[in-house]
Amino acid sequence: MSRSEWWVAAALRLPLLFFAGHPTDAQTFIAWVNRLATVGPWEFYEPGFADDAPGYLLVLWPVGFVTRQWPAIAPWLIKVIPALADFIAAASLAKLAVPVGPNVARAFLCSPAVLFAGAC
Image 1 (cartoon, helix red, strand yellow):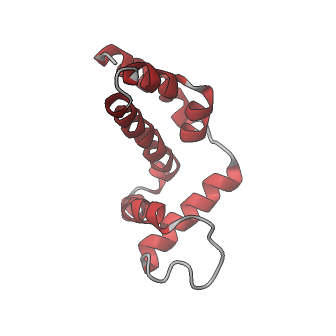
Image 2 (cartoon, helix red, strand yellow; image 1 turned 90 degrees about the vertical axis):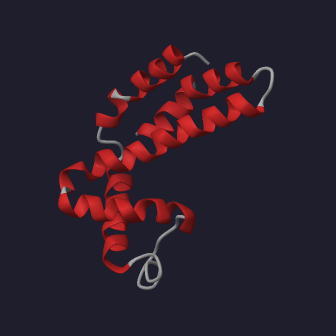
């Protein structure tokens, strides 16, 4: 993929980052981020229900410290992480799926399912 194609994929995601997303999901992630910043990942699962894997919680943990200082950016920052993961996955596809890797990466990044699942 060319550099301009990466920028186009980023431009497709940018407006989606400013949509509110599903209220229950957004509130759940914000609650998880706050809990992680308060008790850390070791005590996260003790009092209640959380249905996400520990690996993603380790990614959300530093977000909790940032959003304590600037709570207004919490919904946006929580959406940026999956969008960045999309680019990492696409770069991996481009390198691993030789010789069709760039086409696979392009299709992945422009797929409506990936766009909305990652950014909304």
